[in-house]
Length: 271
Image (cartoon, rainbow, N blue to C red; front, top):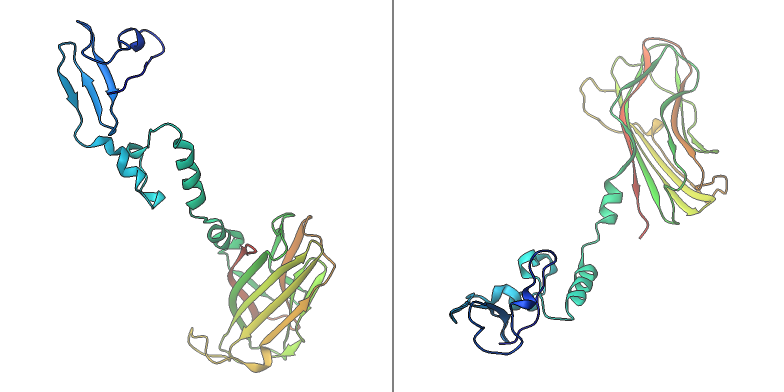
C-alpha cells in the first residue's frame, strides 16, 4: 500500500497520525491508504485491515463512454485526469440552445381582438421587436395568427397589411360576397435577417369560404394571398422594430367584423 499525508483544516491533522513508513502503525495510531488497484484500505491501531469491496466505483468511471452516466460517486480521483474528465463532459454535452430558441416566444397574446363599426386601419397585432433579438444574419421571426371574418352588410372590402418597421406588405382591397356565415382566416409570416439593415419578409393569408360550422372549409381564392419582399435595406435590427398586422374594412357596420383569436411570434436561431 502507498500512503500520503492527509490533513484537515482545523482541529485535526492526519499527517501527525500517519507514519511515513510502510507497515503496521505505531501503537494507538491508525492508517488510511489507497493501494495500486484503487481499493480504499484502513488499518486500525491494532493492525486489523479493513477495505471496501467494490473499488468505490472509481474504475467504473474510467470505462464510461456516455458522459450523462456520470455521477458524483464516480469521480475519478487519479492525479491528473480530473481536468480531462471535465473537458470530455463539456465537449460532449448536449447543445439545446437551438431548441430553446425555437420554442421561446418573442411575443404572444391569447386575447381576442374584435374590430367592427370602423373604417380606419386597425391593429390586429402589434409588438416591438427589441434591438438585438435578431442578432445574427439568418436569425428569423415566425408570426402566426388566426381569426374569422363576417361580411353581411353593404359591399365591404378588406385591406390587410403586414409591417416590419418601414416595410409594408399589403393585399388588394377586395370585396367579399355577403353571407351570414363566418369565414375563417389564418396568417403566417416570417422575417429573416440578411444583414443588420436588411431582411426577407414573407407572408401568407388564407381565408375560407363562408360556412355555418366552425370548420375552416375550402379556401376562398379571391381572398387568399401569398407574397414576399426581399432584402429591403430599411430597417435596423440593432434598434427596436415595430411588427404589426392590420386590417381596414370599407363599411362600418356591426354586421361586418374581423376577429383575431390570438397570435404567437417566436424566434428561430440561425444555424
